[in-house]
Length: 349
Image (cartoon, rainbow, N blue to C red):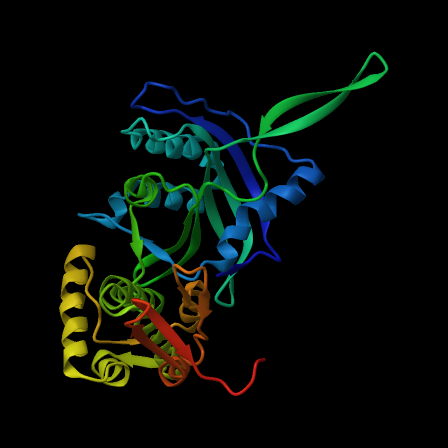
């Protein structure tokens, strides 16, 4: 997560990127944008807002040598010498153009930006932003002609969210520069993250926590819900979040002992974990520090509703993992030939 309260734009340029696959060309600007006050005040939060809630960060990747990563090289040049800003920004667009190997890759505006005063982990640094605007919206423009007002439709950039963007901080750890990325138009998951930026998640508590929660979410959907029903799925997810909230360090063996009640369930989880690691090409650590921010974010995304085909929904409290087991029973009525849930309570809230 970053803070933008003291951030400022020091350099800003716009280019157009085409599509190599269908032979649409790039168009380059030769000068930086000179903002008026109103445009600047709208542009700065528009660009930085998406990164205020980003928990996980990335690092540059390359199969041979990180220094051969193109965007890493361009970022290094810009951090070392801002005088080459326009030239390097054009190289960035050309590199993006070279990744358009499909008709699905959209053309658009590319914004290359230098920021100052970005706050990250109690440090203030400068950063490079690369943004691609792929979708434009229609809006009405009124104008005066012959003493009467008329209206026309124009296309422009929505100020609500960027389509794709990355923020490369001039701050590094043992893995290299810290990078944040967003993709709100992920029609090609490989295009932005892997091909253009060539980045990977940082090997830190945020990533380890995220990976394990994703494993648990998939296990709950593909195994528990499919074979045992939504109640078992939701109880498992609630217990998982509860375990992460109560422990600063997750040990996989202790997690299994705490969550599962029998050896059969443990074996199901272990077998699924092996398949998951192979399919996702990841290795889940046996012990890792818990990232509280990731847990809180994932907790908000988990839905614990049991939706029934009789237009009835039962909402479970994810903060009370034992309530479902104690006060909710699932059964089958032979006369009606239907499943049912029985709910116990003292009084209606």
